[in-house]
Image 1 (cartoon, rainbow, N blue to C red):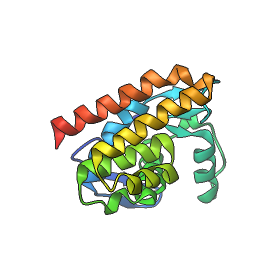
Image 2 (cartoon, rainbow, N blue to C red; image 1 turned 45 degrees about the vertical axis):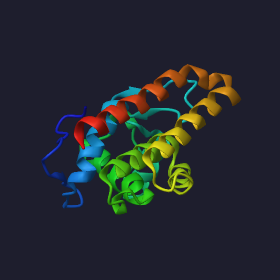
Image 3 (cartoon, rainbow, N blue to C red; image 1 turned 135 degrees about the vertical axis):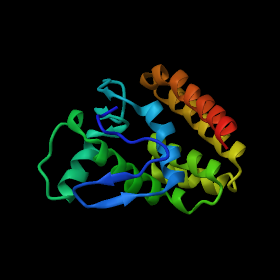
Length: 174
């Protein structure tokens, strides 16, 4: 993790913008996500491309440009940038912040990060906000990805393990 990343139960502060993310539900969910998304990766088979802490280079570039900042390597992303990107671009943008059920909010947020906001919102509707149905839709989609594109088969076990970790995290923490 980047130096200075503040985990559960503490405030997250963005020095540049001077705001504090004081959302316990978000912080708990982000802690789980960072366990799955930690570290720099540039796997040629990953359709997301170069990433660090689950944030793609393209997402990071857009974020930096929106702030009027020069583009830099995603390897150099700060903990404050990680927090803000996840909070604004995934947690709030997906509507996870509006879900009353913390477990569902985590599943939805994690899906938005791993599969995109549009797909996460589609799963939310199709599942009628039932967590088990939501996770089955997600699992089935992962299997479909691997079947349709052989280069993605290498990721299937990790994707399915992520769902297992998510289910265990929900069971043990909510």
